[in-house]
Image 1 (cartoon, rainbow, N blue to C red):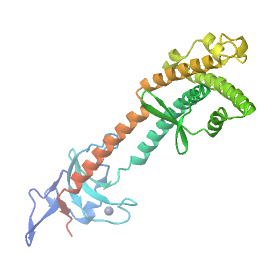
Image 2: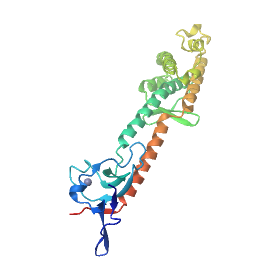
Image 3: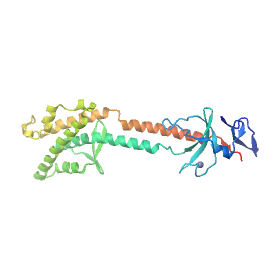
Image 4: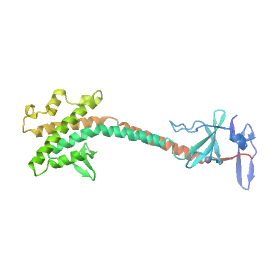
Amino acid sequence: MTGAADANGPNRRRGTVKVQSLMLDGARVTLGVYRQIKDEPLIDQDTCQLRGTPLGTVNYHRPDDCPRSGEHLHVVWNKGNDLRRASVTKDWPASGEHSQKVERLARQEQAMYEPVVKLLLLARGQRGIAPSFDGAAMIINVDGRAFRCSDYMLRSDLAALRSQDRSVRAAAEKRIRRERARLLEELVTRAMGTELASAMPSESDLARLVGGNEKNSLFARGVVESVAKATEEVAVLLLKQVLKRPGPAVAAKQSMDRLQAAYDRQYQELAALVQLFIAA
Ligand SMILES: [Zn+2]
């Protein structure tokens, strides 16, 4: 029962406007028949491509047929040899779902960067290199890319490193050493089993960096600069490793934008289709 847009059916002329009727097996479709046409999505939700051949739109709206909200079209289409109808909303229905996925991936990426960025901030802070600010967050640049960190504790400790008061500086230095050990451990744990593992320093190197008692480490007392510098090198190395990865959030965003554009194009083309009339 292939539908048609009055290819062989009776054409009526109202003034100069040609009226096209929805035809089924050579007969004009009545409202009762129209409402029996199976409702099925025309646009494939995974690819945003059409699942059949659209015949035209029907300007017949009633609450139990219309999508709950927003601008939409009612399209009659052929699925192979079968007639179908579909409600197509102007807004891409999968938009929210895709945005959430992109946000989730971006958060995961951010969680990956965060300890490395903190490590870099504190290592540079110990070396007297203060980060720049953009209102709320500290910013650090690696290879021309800016990374943000809004950790308030770290920020106040880094500021305390530049205090005039020696005991304030010493307390901040102690907290930063502890934080550095914690971050390095966190990174080692997180890198395990991933390609980042190869970028991590060996356990004995880490022991020298993390070692609770730096007096006994290879970095002899009074060479905090060396520990900070080594930490900075590790952090930069890790950050570059992270950057080398394709970035699933970026890929997901590109895919979302492609699908959104495809959907919008489909909608525009459907909206431009001929309007079909239902027989009384
Ligand atoms: Zn409607």
